Length: 77
Image (cartoon, rainbow, N blue to C red; front, side):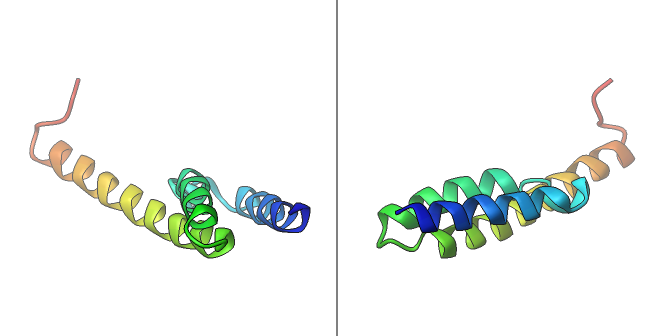
């Protein structure tokens, strides 16, 4: 039980060492994915990796939408 938790902690520390732009959305997605993977068949690491990828994708999509709304003059003041 402690070994997978240590592996997840080490992975999160390595992700934290990357630049903020790359980690945006990753940590939150990794936590949610890790918990879901753990309860869905003891695949916490796989869930964390998938959650990280989805979180990064979702953050990039939101960033694109914000940039488009600012270009169109619909950004918040």
